[in-house]
Image 1 (cartoon, rainbow, N blue to C red):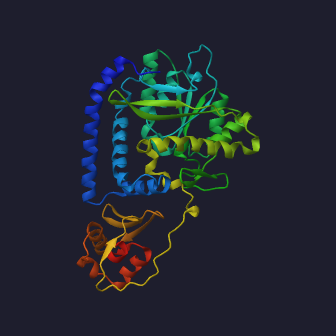
Image 2 (tube, rainbow, N blue to C red):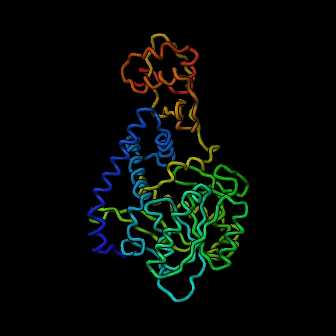
Image 3 (tube, rainbow, N blue to C red):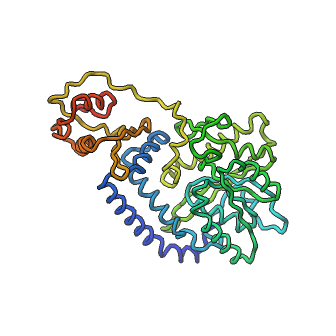
Length: 402
């Protein structure tokens, strides 16, 4: 579907002004956070980009961060969905036969989507098409978004003079598998976010039912619930992915309805592994293209297979502290504070080391400095502390740089 002229005229006249205001608001908030070192989210994002998309230059990381926050600002205020009832502005492509109008009851399907682009619109799309939906989300989102989701559903029903229903399930419930299977048995379709990746036990849970799959440049630990549910209930999976594209000066959400995955088309012994890998491969293709539209950048390190990470060797050469000028190794390390507590963050290993106030100030001075003069805050620290940082690669000598 193409965006209607009427919608573009209405939406486009305010988009640029609203986006610019949002970007300025986000930039100013982040500038103030930088002054007081409250930049944990930025540095975890930088680490994730370095691991998963090493071809993205480090100099672009902060601008990606600001665009992600701006998109979230707009989406959280429903600015992109001012017309809930109409699909005219939703450019839907791919295998979208399942959205065609019909008088027959909609068959139950498992809709798999991701936190990319205008992903909130997938819910609108499916409810608007008349699917009785069961949305599976983590406990935190369920608590914070429950009323908003029900409001959207009510708006759609009012617009369409319909009675489409939505049911919400907690992905972390111990009985979530049975609840999802029961919903499908009753003719309800499931909508689930693969890259939310939560399940029983929460985000950090590790067990034998999980798979190690490749994603972009790394190996992650993934739950297998979507594929197992499809196999057990013989229900097809329909992946749907969203991204924003600029049309006549304003960003509009586009939706790709990707080919259906049917458990009968893959040998049973291979279905769970192959399907889980396929679903992540689909996401990877779009994240590479729209790297600044994937909200999961802020937490996806929690699914890394840390056993597969290669830790750079420690610096073994001796250092004579007196008279040596150091630079902070910002290619690997970052500094941030949580409230008043300071931390040294290793973006290679995701380890955060607590720092005493004087150590944080000294390293911050090094981080900010570019001259061959070693800040007095550093020289006043114990030699053993400086030598420890040297061995970890936190410090680099001027000679090493040159």
